[in-house]
Length: 199
Image 1: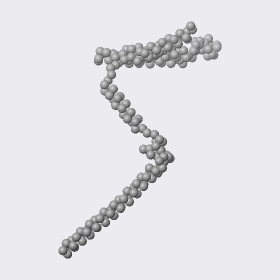
Image 2: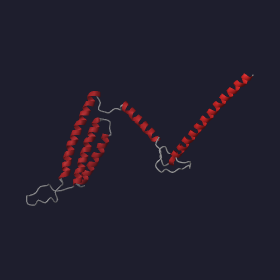
Image 3: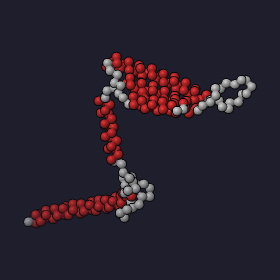
Image 4: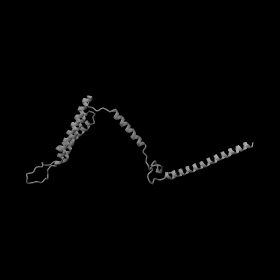
């Protein structure tokens, strides 16, 4: 087995263990998983850099041919610093959790669960009110421009105009009937009084 193949196996092992530990509820295991994952990423960067000679010259031949790329090594140094900072932060969280509740495992927060359930129910309700404008043509709640009239009863704005004009005609006809009725009542009343006076 070659050295790169052994490094690939080691990298896969570190990734697998790191992801498995990060899925735990214990903050200590999450910390260990994060450290293993960071080391696996460092191995991955080294493997992508390839092999090469050290960037040293004898002062006469200044060619860079065959030298290893220094950028992956700089990225690994940066990753080590970031991993150290996040490790310190997680250690502080673990210490604080142990001081407060004497446990380093995360517990379910009932208030957070209630908020999550409420948001899920609201999102499902909004999803159930969604509609496809093209399915109903011009009968959709907010039809798209140029929607087809599927039932041949006219566009919605044309029907609204017809309904408004029909309502106005009925109102004016109703007012005319009411005036005639009141006139008849008045006339009938006066005729009745005249008849009573004649009697």
